[in-house]
Length: 478
Ligand SMILES: *[C@@H]1O[C@H](CO)[C@@H](O)[C@H](O)[C@H]1NC(C)=O
Ligand SMILES: *[C@@H]1O[C@H](CO)[C@@H](O)[C@H](O)[C@H]1NC(C)=O
Ligand SMILES: *[C@@H]1O[C@H](CO)[C@@H](O)[C@H](O)[C@H]1NC(C)=O
Ligand SMILES: *[C@@H]1O[C@H](CO)[C@@H](O)[C@H](O)[C@H]1NC(C)=O
Ligand SMILES: *[C@@H]1O[C@H](CO)[C@@H](O)[C@H](O)[C@H]1NC(C)=O
Ligand SMILES: *[C@@H]1O[C@H](CO)[C@@H](O)[C@H](O)[C@H]1NC(C)=O
Ligand SMILES: *[C@@H]1O[C@H](CO)[C@@H](O)[C@H](O)[C@H]1NC(C)=O
Picture (cartoon, rainbow, N blue to C red):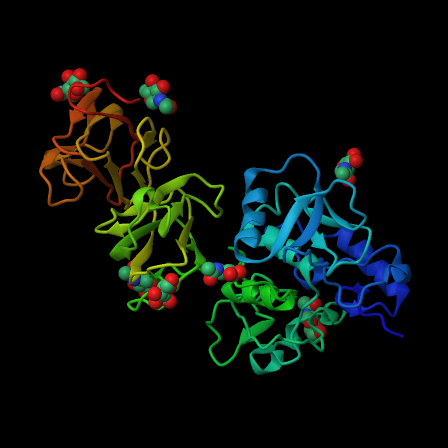
């Protein structure tokens, strides 16, 4: 008898009593900590055996190649929930869609501190417990959602990659470490998976790890920042999705168009989602050569301030040759889309990205920006850059409405420097510190750069700035 889709804490449902006890323990004694439940977060369906009606626990694929997973969301979730879904949508063919009348769906509920779900599709309504407070990190949301997408768990070849320290696991928890006979879809072991246990999972002895990576114990495991590139590949292989997008999740790296520096392919669309572990993404182009067309209707690059093509645009359709100014996203996610049509191609682009802790890049007027945390005190040891780029011929008018930083002769400790141009080689208009009243600075060209620096001691509220730009002789664009 096959009980594939019926799991209790990751074990085939053999002992009903034990299962009920486990579920009871799960629901009653989930620690109110921000370490999410790991294998212990897998639920058993109350309908038990009658729920066993799927072959692989995968969700069906639509004719257009997407896999729809209908969801019903209870109230009280922040934007982070939608943000977490968008990474699946951008990088895989999975689409979480609000449920209308579908029979099979996931029901997302906020229940006292619990982050738990079933694994795979089980049929009918399946609950996902995601406490709208304690489960709200992108990685935890994605971890629970990925449980619903497929049922891959502990790999059969796990012992080649980690040592399980059974001496620190109580007998009633050891079941969480059972190996499963998994098909690993040809992918290497993923220490960086959002599905991986952290090193201290189920340890009964404080400070003692239960999982130690081989051969190097310091390999990080148990991250909950978000999907890993291999998590994405795993989903795409299991569902045989077309190549969707590439995830770049390091603190820094390089992005190039396909075949760079040879010509990029005809008739293709590529996306890269850059998600740095923290901070904001700064992207600097090193080379750019994309077939020119009026309004870039043929080939183009477009860059978004967030994880999806529905996010605000950082750089609108751009083509041709030349320099693209540095881009800084407002969060840790930036999406690059590159499209080529069926004719003429060029060498494409090369860019590097790094994680920055603050700053921004503005290509449209009418936005206020502040030092990090304003009006609360900024952090020590910050170095932030904001770049304002107006269309050619325009001039920028920047106003500091409020300003308070540590005061020192020549502003040697904390300072805000304003440059009349795109970088620090431009003329320094002012280097500010202390307390200043409102003041406006006008550029002579179409670019302005601000550099905010704080040292290790004495923090103040910082600044609030706004900017406009105008063509000389015309009225200001707000
Ligand atoms: C979603 O769940 C709520 C209760 O949380 C229920 O009232 C509503 O009918 C559900 N909607 C759908 C489409 O399942
Ligand atoms: C931890 O688990 C080990 C192995 O099961 C057991 O021998 C030990 O007594 C447990 N320690 C505590 C403090 O429960
Ligand atoms: C890139 O990240 C690595 C760690 O991931 C770090 O050691 C290195 O200094 C970073 N390089 C730059 C240029 O930021
Ligand atoms: C472009 O690619 C699509 C599939 O990716 C294909 O269906 C279409 O025929 C291609 N067009 C040309 C002109 O090659
Ligand atoms: C793209 O297609 C054109 C003809 O439409 C062809 O001349 C060219 O070599 C192709 N370029 C690439 C990189 O395949
Ligand atoms: C920017 O800040 C100024 C000063 O506090 C305020 O008057 C203005 O409404 C703000 N503008 C926006 C777009 O938030
Ligand atoms: C800056 O430019 C604005 C708009 O052209 C003008 O009203 C203002 O007087 C200028 N300020 C300074 C300090 O030059």
